[in-house]
Image (tube, rainbow over the protein chains, first blue to last red):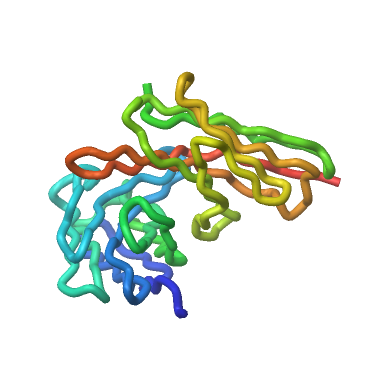
Length: 113
Length: 111
């Protein structure tokens, strides 16, 4: 099993640019989660999908953030325009069901200059 | 008050020591609880679920105290390899499940 796959692993961009993070969940998992982790705020849930449908997006910081899950094997998190305060590690995780064990991807380290 | 709170530490303990962490939660409707472990610059990984009756996995024991709204993790006979950040996760159910991670407690086991 390949586990949760995220790309890119590292991203450095300039303020104002669009950033797209990608995630491939574990095959067969029904739920997908996007998290952001910083030293100051810890691990924050941004949004989660169940069967490709967004269930809770209350953690999405603002309109600059958007997430999609067009099919069961792919999701994107987009930031447009990016700002320096968006610099963080973004994790994607998947599970059989929202209340079950989550398997995290390796994360994308984003630096916005 | 934060929904889920943990002492950030660090907890510095010698090898072989017993150490315990608590995680308090504010939502009395919380239903499911987990402990995750996160190594430096790595992703979180499930350590163990926390059941109402408590559960044990080798040197690790997790307990739930619903009356006082906290969960605990006890590590016996600490190893150097236990050095990591331990995150608690609290899930409440309702119209939509709400999942909240604590900010983590850092443990450093030394020789």
